[in-house]
Amino acid sequence: MARRSSHGRLKAEINIVPYIDVMLVLLVIFMVTAPLLNQGVEVDLPKASAEPINTHNQDSEVVVFSVRKDGACFLNVGAEQAQLVDCDTLEPQRQSIESLLARKPQPPVLVRADRELVYDRVIKAMTALNKAGAAKVGLSTAPPDESPRR
Image (tube, rainbow, N blue to C red; front, side, top):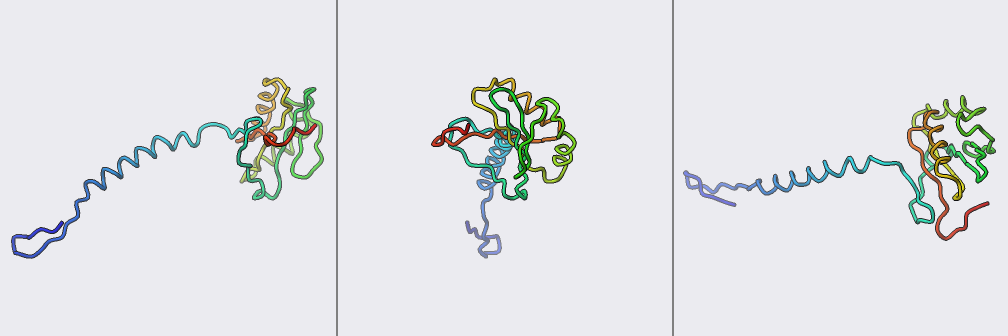
């Protein structure tokens, strides 16, 4: 808006009050939504279409903890052969997995469990990984158009 000053010249001004109001509303929206984005564990629900986790930026070292229907647990890192481990202590691989999870950035950790497995067994597996140093654990599922591997 232009106004005439007391000396007769035009003086250009911009009313910034509406812009400040908009900025404050956006600030409140970001303050409310930001904590919601960081809460929760990344989980892929069974038979749901979801974006795959990007595991290619970690030199292909993905830690996969598998639990079969009979309760047997297996652990493998990257392309290595899966090795039988104790479900609660991760022995005999505990030392190697702890040193791997201590690295920065931490490699992705996924839990693969049979769909007929008791939920308690999956939670115990995730607890064992957490004790070994895994900060974030994802649950691996099959896409909706594929049948689960046996």
